[in-house]
Length: 148
Image (cartoon, rainbow, N blue to C red):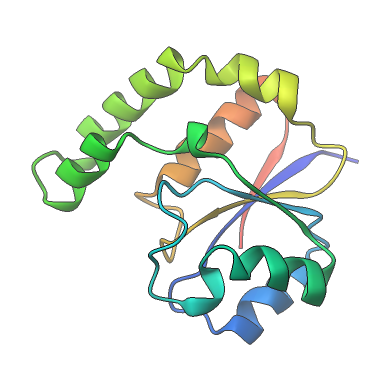
């Protein structure tokens, strides 16, 4: 069976839909890659509530790992439209390389369970979770990236 990495954004999803999607896809670990996990619009996605809900509703493990987040400066500049998506990609890839993220993935993560990258964006298009999932694909080879 081919390995998979999943991604999900919580924006425009109700709590019921969000948690049901994770359960339906048998997610075992949510890897929160947001820079700020406490100041989101959807209350169910704020830490520490999300960790509690994932565990109690779905039996899912939760990890918040900011090493997979853009720098605060890059994120601010992108949100203010001071840089475009291509520039964001370039800056974020530099940040991931400086953090030696490929080594970090190899040493700290595996796909022996269903892992889902969490961010806030509705879709993975123009979201850094698409870039992080590509790094997982670089490390683990021929895997499917499933955007929930």
